[in-house]
Image 1 (cartoon, one colour):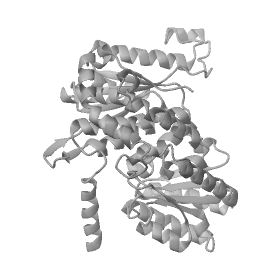
Image 2 (tube, rainbow, N blue to C red):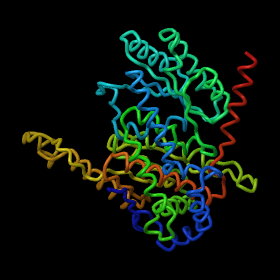
Image 3 (cartoon, rainbow, N blue to C red):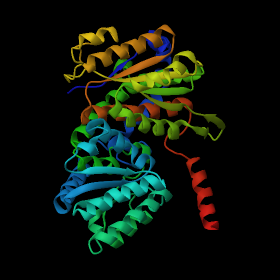
Image 4 (cartoon, rainbow, N blue to C red):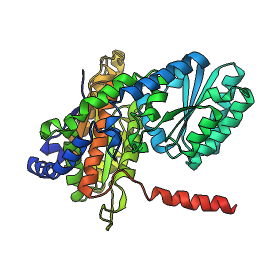
Length: 442
């Protein structure tokens, strides 16, 4: 199987081997903690590490996917969720199927309703209603761990009204609810005889992509979820290895932490693939919610955090690289690149264009992109801007599973180094409390 590759050198990362080794030595207690959690089920906060090996859960999801496809002839899948309830699925779907999937798909379209935005929600409603009028099958997948997320319930009610209009007697067949067992939404589903998928105990939203949260919608749009989970499982052992050269998660965490201690508090994920942009969005939430904390594990006020940003090559070379190479020295970069693919899309052999841009005639687009990546990295190196690179051999389910699992373990390590709990998000509750009070007063 092809595997992702983490490329770290002291010259490009601006961190010595000695410094990396000192930091990874600090990680040994957490490494043992994570390693001991593997295979122990869902009894503690490291529960997500055991999702990819849960064959019973994966088979259950696959069976429900097959059942809904057979029974409903689904033309449109609407995933209603926010944050960790949708970002992982979006990341994998767009990386594998492409951002223009809906325009090219002749079978099932997918829409992620992940915000309460009047214009966007109304547009998706119109698209779904058009399918109803054309006799197409529609499935709503409502995803919320707590079962009480305001934005998710608002959108569910709006789409449920439309569903009941066209499927008054059988609307329950067109809904699958993914939530914690015995949440209020779970109990509603049970009363309405709506299919449910359980989010395992202690699996937080941003760590849930290998649970039914991600697997069910991905399975419906043709992603090989067996391969996705196999990819994730394949790096769990290596990411708990004491041998630094084999442990990409620890090595990456050490790089980020070393630069953070030097004052580099902005971590840019620079992705050279338009289809993989959403991987950056997923990682942004993972870092933001996991590491941005007011207090440490002892309750001391520390106000720590790494600010995650996302850039996409090659378009953002013409928007923000001027800032990255000319602005403040407060940014570290992880480049995510694709190994030269075999796609034969070529620039035509128009010799008269050689005077406009030399040395591109007849070359593949992939080879030109690779040259751009090398040029960018040379520029970063020459200006002593710290970076590392993760190379993806192909946009496959297996490799995406590897990348996402490695990044989740990396963030666990970073939480330990920063002394904070990477599994909670207490400040997120503040806006929810204020919103409920405002709504109650209206």
